[in-house]
Length: 196
Image 1 (tube, rainbow, N blue to C red):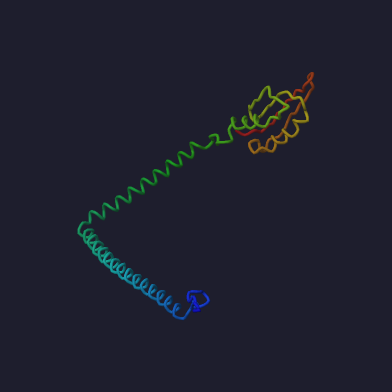
Image 2: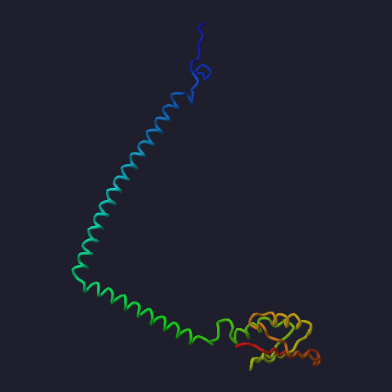
């Protein structure tokens, strides 16, 4: 009886070597060829850019010489340039004068965020929930607040916050009056030295 041998079995086939000397040499040759091609392209581009730069430099030098010849041939242009520079200096001095005038006009104006309305908005935002104001007055450097409260203890942190507020910086509490009126309390607060 004849025997059959399967020659395509993986055990009988020659093993494929991925990192053989031949494969590594071929890969190295491909890398070297790519590197040489890239270097040749970069050298060609540099040579082209160098020639373009030289051409632009020659053109710039020629234009500069023609401009110098034109200025030498027409001295009125140099005088005109000088008069333009003098005019520019005159305009700059006028702008400086106008800026100084504007600064003088702005002196004494109310600065944004430090106006009476800014102070009043701040007071309105900080009034405790247990209190309400009947009157707010800002007159002759005195801030007067009067109102009512259900809890006089709630006034203490509010008054401290009023003293710490930068809008009311440097103000002194001159009068604080709290008196009971039925089921609620009346209060009056006066701070002097409020700046406009």
